[in-house]
Structure formats: C-alpha cells, structure tokens
Image 1 (cartoon, rainbow, N blue to C red):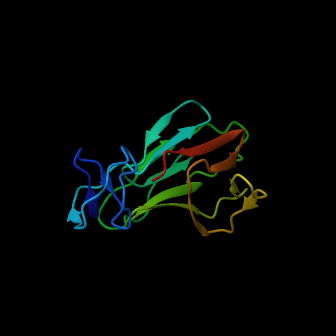
Image 2 (cartoon, rainbow, N blue to C red):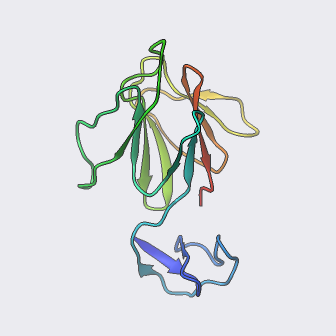
Length: 149
C-alpha cells in the first residue's frame, strides 16, 4: 500500500503532512510499504487484537469467501445466551480505513461513537471506524477501537 514514511520508519497515509506516531514532517513522495497496523481492537473480555489484517468476529466465526486473496483472522467470543451470531461482524481493512460491517447478525450491531446517539447498523451495512468507537454485539460483549490512524 502507498504510504509516506517518516525518518524513523513510521508509515502514514499519503494524505498526512506529519507523522501520526512521532510528529515529524513527512517527505512529499509516497512509497509502497507492507500493511502497517492501523489500530487495535480491545474486546470487552480483555483480548487485544492488532488491526493488521481483516477480522471476522462471532460466536463460531467462519469465512465463506476470501476478498483479495487474504484470509481474515477469526476472533471467537462467548455468547451464553446466543445473542451473538456465528459470524457477527467483520472488521475490514481497506486502504488506510478500518471498516465495520454487520454480517446479517440476527440481533444486530450497535455502533457507539462519542458525541452521537448509539446507532444500530443495518444488515450488511459498512461504517468507517474512528478512534474510540465501540461496537456492541450482545451478551455484554463489545469491541473498542483504539489507536485508529
């Protein structure tokens, strides 16, 4: 993917003028780099997952088709009352964006963003995630997105 890399080696979106990690100015030219970590996902159970590949999260997650030839990481969460679907949501990395997609979850997914009322995603709806966003899946399981570039 294209990135502007600071003198310390931190990759940044090509639209940035200064490094998100260290604040130093970025060179004008973008270069091809391996996908950097775009943030982290903190599961309410305590698990912390780097966002360096797409994820499918659910009670018994599985993948029926693979996009772009890269298998997403499967993240299993407990759902004693069955509120969480087998494959509930996908966290998809597209370019420099982190997206949340409801995978036709039976009981839905609620996106909580600071300063806005909680919003239930429609089935198959995709939303760009921002730092601090929380996805509520059910059964007291939530996903908090941190350090999103």
